[in-house]
Image (tube, rainbow, N blue to C red; front, side, top):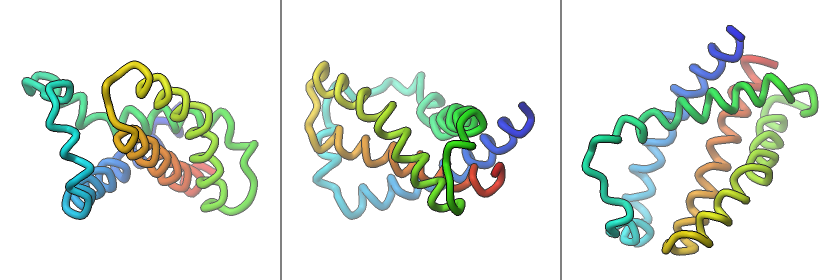
Length: 135
């Protein structure tokens, strides 16, 4: 359990930095994608902002547990294992969630596609980190 928590925390810190750096770059280079977020659906009063900032740590802990449970199924070097881990996560978890989100909410396909890509990148990065520090 200690290994899961430690590797999840390390992955969380790395995901936090990459996620917010990526968000800054995405807004800077793809501003048209973020125009869709000027929607009452995405306005917050600020009372739950901490949940948004903790996301990288929540997902990294979940992925760390998943990694510990199934790491024996992934073969090759740590980069290949991380990539395969991200692909598995994207197919098993992200694709169904994005499907139901798109079907149930008034959001654009570009938003859902960006969320799918973002989640895939997070899972690959976490997979590489976890494969490296918890082989």
